[in-house]
Amino acid sequence: MRTKIAVANGDGIGPEIMQAVLKVFEANNVPLEYEFVEMGKSYFDAGHSTGMTAKAKETIETLGILFKGPMETPKGKGVKSINVTARKVWNTYANQRDFRTLNGVDTVFSKAGIPINLTIIRENIEDTYGGIEHLLTYDVAVGRRIITRPGSAQVIRYAFEMAKRKGLKKLACGHKANIMKLTDGLFLETFQEIAKEYPEIEASDIIVDDLCMKLVTRPETFEAIVLTNLQGDIVSDLCAGLVGGLGFAPSANIGDNISIFEAVHGTAPDIAGKGIANPTALLLSGISMLRFLGFSKNAADIENALLYTLEQGVHTGDFGNKAIPASNTNAFTDAIIANIGQVPANGGVFSNPDFEARVSHLQPIKNKLTVTKNIKEEMIGVDVFVEARVQPNELAEMAKKVLTDNFELVMISNRGTQVWPTGSIYTELVNEYRVRFEKKAGKEITQKELLHIAADFSELAKVCSVEFLMNFDGKIGYTLAQGQ
Image (tube, rainbow, N blue to C red):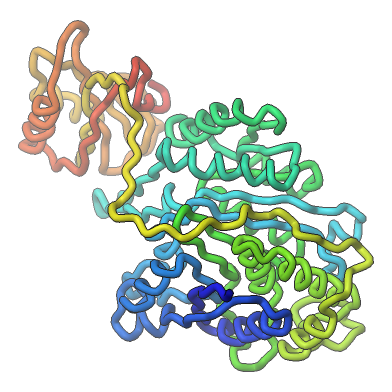
């Protein structure tokens, strides 16, 4: 019984390394059948704004597995990254990347005898990768950073379950909740809540800048780390550097219905077609996919062959002992195939439980919507963002003109720093302010009243954006300005 999966060759060196990996699969009699789909740069160029054909989308949603090579997003054409689009559209909420020392791939740490074996779990859907940005004025751009409780819970629970399957003892949460108190704060709070369900795993948290320092000084102290999307992107590439680069970094994007396994390195157009590309990252990603599909014996055989090959000093031109002539892509692939059945002296793998075997692919009939229920909401006020070329005290006088009996003007900030009612003459300004109106004690207000304030203010200044101030179950749902 063969399992059919969707395969996208990718751009640049993509077709070459994909051919190499599928050749290894064939040599090991992996029970897969492939349906090739059309995605990537050429389909952007052909006018498909999503970077894929309608047929490709239908095929992937039917089969539930996409195995893809690296893909390029054209620059300067206003199109979104096909890689990010695919992960988000199909809700592959957990990006898992496993980093470890590979014998034959020399790094600063391998030469020092410090073994690295850690897993990064990156939230894959939310954060700044929504790409929701606006120019509020010619001089001021803003981007929305979306962190949700359901999205955080999905990836954090996956991280704990992954640690449990692997027999890991420690899981850390990387964050910046000391500064981004609501967004990263929500992610950290969710981590701490879910951690209570896994008492056998030591759960800790670490500020992301401190994490980066410790990763490059003492990486062996970490086993697994879960992070938000942007921070996870940066940290996972940092970890790739610890083990030899993105050429040795597998990537799995796991969702409840559709999952994507891919090489995350670039398309390397400068060497495309030369037959010298390194297929290791895509092969490692493919090995992860085999485990996910339940083909753990094939995965172990191929991984042992790869590790044995590297251990013997066989390498492509981008790494390895320069005293040993580099192999081209075909020769490197053939060496792996010839070594199937071999086990590396440095320790082989046997049905390594990196992934829980995939259940049958589900076809949902409607979009999943998750909402936390029975939360008491209270409207407190409104932040009105305006464009103005005046001093803070002048803007305050303008704002007071739109006050009603239910509201008071409490604060004006510029780039997040309070400039009224108190501030410093040394705070440099741009032409976009946040003006905060809050209800008076004992008053009840409506959404319509908040919008009316913004509408009335628009008669005096250009209103760029409006955000309501809310309390949820008595907990403040907005931040204070610096200096407030």
